[in-house]
Length: 149
Image (cartoon, rainbow, N blue to C red):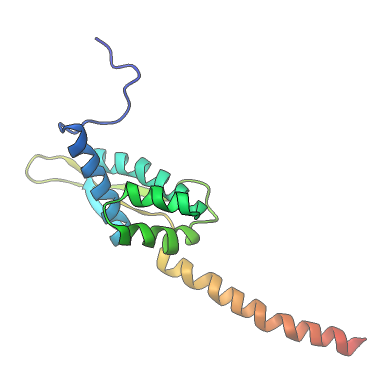
């Protein structure tokens, strides 16, 4: 028997349990901005969250509702749409980074840390300061042009 055409990992769980696991991991990733889990779960959650981020960047009501349906809590969905997605607007894809860490002590499973590629705390400050600088320089440039004429 072959496994052609079957995508995704099963994690030895039923379908509803698997969906709840992925939703919970994605919710935690958005809430804490970095989580540590097994490598296989990190790979699955990465593709799932990338799709949610793409929907969140659109920002309309329909996309917001799809993001809410894809996460466990409404608060994390609003955080994704209102805070995280605008900071990632310049990227087309590759919003998340998976880095391998140690092996788990009990069963020696490969652990991994998944986090956002851009530092969301510093990237929020940069556009604000540059926008303020642009606003402060624009009127002085206009005044200088008027004075020359």
